[in-house]
Length: 420
Ligand code: AMP
Ligand code: GLY
Image (tube, rainbow, N blue to C red):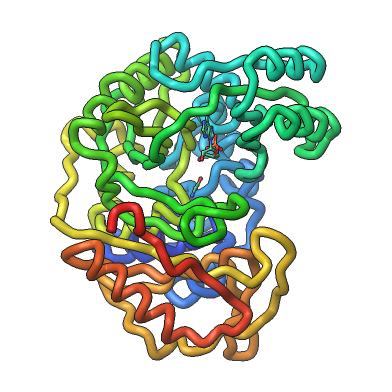
């Protein structure tokens, strides 16, 4: 099979790494890819948000199967275009991608599906939004309705912060994404994520993970795209997973079918867990980054078969072969991230590290220049390890982190702390 993966982050590096372990993969191209991906696969510089460009590229390269990494091409309808062209694709239609691209759409679906989640109001007018905030009081959560690259959510512990967030959003701080807002009840509890594959009909759980969204140790400081993750997430027990499947995931998927927009791809189910009960925080219509890196390390070669089965509507016969293992990934980011950071600092010591089925450094934002690896983004490396216990995996990952010589970078030393 000739495979094309769309995306350029650590998530896509881990997807490429897993796909290459599967003997059914004859050729792999990643577009646009990055310096780490270029070490294991061909990379192609195409505009992955243009359905036309992706279809022509796939046809010219005899691609049999396309795996879409990030949300933007999905929201832009790239999966629709591929399907129309008769090319097999893993990823939802633009209509189904609204589960991530529109917070108000998701809240409405949850209400119709009776899925437990925060109570909310949806506003297109700043004054009405402010009146709702004053009526509800703080803490309260203000969200830009559309895609805002993970930055459109303000968890306001006091009323003034929430009111200021409304001014920012209606003032254009998030572009079109902020012209509508969803205001939510603040939910307490511990967050964890469940990942399920869907083929429009059947649903298969492929694992749990916990992300570390804050930049600082002890989960303090600014929100980031994620500073590390581990799988499985012990807080998401089998009982809680069963409740989440019965009360949240299945009713949502059934509601999507009822509306004529069946979901096909991976659904990232962000949950808040309190007193043994899960409530939905958010859906994403793609793998998490860096959660994907730990899932791929645990799934290995079967990941491709599972995604292929989802794309072909064969999930009913598929199953996951789980090892009793744990995986962890530590994000190394450029100093200053998530604020302003320097690009182009050199990273040394990567060549001396092991790369095997239990140890991998996935590249998120790097570029190769005259034989050197340079940082080219905020989140730069995902140092990932697998072990028989979370502690073993963590110790291995930090051994690798410490062997990397990158004065321009930093990392959190406490990834996995809630479970350890
Ligand atoms: P989202 O983009 O919707 O996942 O929100 C980003 C982060 O904000 C989540 O991962 C939570 O940590 C936090 N958050 C979002 N909604 C709520 C809520 N209703 N209550 C508490 N925290 C929330
Ligand atoms: N790590 C969080 C996300 O991918 O949305």
